[in-house]
Image 1: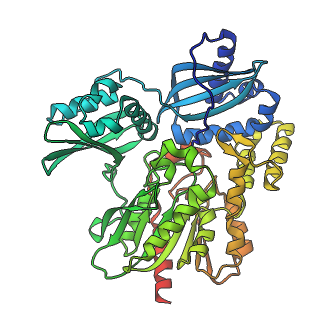
Image 2: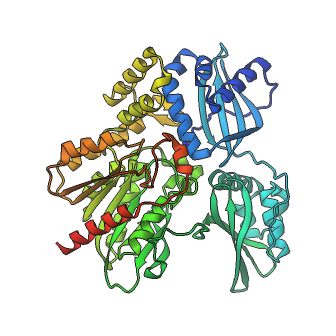
Length: 539
């Protein structure tokens, strides 16, 4: 997840210092091209301690998953801050436009580095192909995606003008690009009329997924509404185990004010009651299907279970739906997982059709799911690709496993010492470990660590891991077995030949590139969950 940090300075025009800007550019180039030793040497002493080589590699992998490959610098701004100077590189990535902010100290050493969604609008160099048959709608959308906000402002009625000013339109564009990436094409068009208004719903392909855009016109042919949301449309075929005739998918809203969340509820057809499995996402900011490259693991699980008589609910995190509110929402386990999950579970308990409610957490979601399940009083908890060790230990293990052969013995020792301090709570909460990521975030997850709960809970628990998962490796599953194997309420299963998404793999790639290969969640996992839930329903 990319977490924004507020820059408390006023942007002013200035002449860029050639030497300083060259250092900042060199740092940016080295970091995004994997030249970590070069980038490391450009940092000052404090930055080297906060962001060693291991942290750089880890951060680059996280960013690769979230924003994709770096493409180009679009704009550069300079922000003087006393003895410091920050350079804001509005940069194009595969997933959209983000600000890369590099701060230099008086010695022209890198003293800060972080990334946030950018408000910079990159005009389209090619004409956007949108043809709805309505000239106003076509002009409005083409102007929106070309950055012509002053012009399209005049196409709106007075009510919409009051809220969607040219500045607000620019911000909306930045948010959409940050979530969806570059506009590609229109896949489907539908229109409907109501009370003299006509609405056009365009299902569009963007670089990062498929989304619906709705433009509503009033009787005077003025824009009376403009909405953007994730689309239920999918070009990719469902897995073979999916039976669309066996279930119905509904769009519902969950959560609480002011951060309501769009959710998808799948319910089996022709059944009076049925169990419900709520899917809790892993780390990062994914769409409702958990889309990674061509893969949609949470959708696969949802349709697989719904095809076999088990209702499913999946919803995104607040960070995806409200990308401009990250500072306000905060970055903690409570904000990311706990608060929403407790509310959603309580809302689902009010629906009498559910014969039982089960919480299924994936990856980091699996690490906090047992605590949430115990607190909420559900009927069982499912831990998928979870971990029996804390996040700091995971970070240490991954750094040593994935980058250890590139470290000197001194660097390894520094890495081990740093993460052990983090494990012991010896680093101040406010310490920034990576852009937007503080020690306090690690500590917040520790408060909901799964193992103390799993060692005491009487809830039925299903723990499933994958043999070739480099993020939650086989030795983690062995710890689950050693610590929990004698508990009668806990079922443990290790799947051979599967990766972190429970998809087939050869295990040769130990990076997020693994997830760019198309696949489907294994039917073995679907069958295991179905069997486990159904057995509990008979007890």
